[in-house]
Image (cartoon, rainbow, N blue to C red; front, side, top):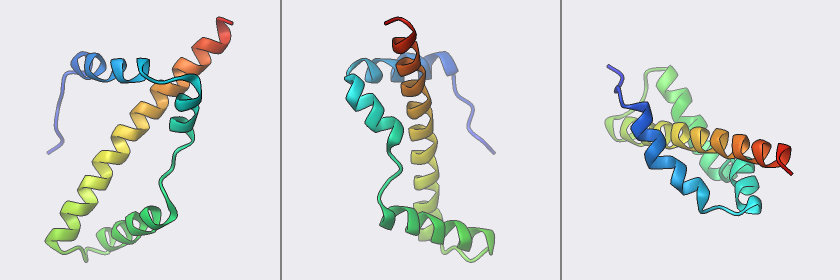
Length: 90
């Protein structure tokens, strides 16, 4: 079952992180996609997951990558929004 969390609390906890970033750092965060070896490992685990072949340790590793990816996606979206907002107010 999926976890439920308080969105407002999540926003309060993550928004201050973006205040620490310079414009260049925000752009780098938006562009970040991980290194090639990391992407290859995640792809391998995703394939094995689809095929039902993940060992318990691999499942835990894959779930960690999925959670990290979700978090990064949210931070990247927030950074994009802030960059766009900053450009419209120049």
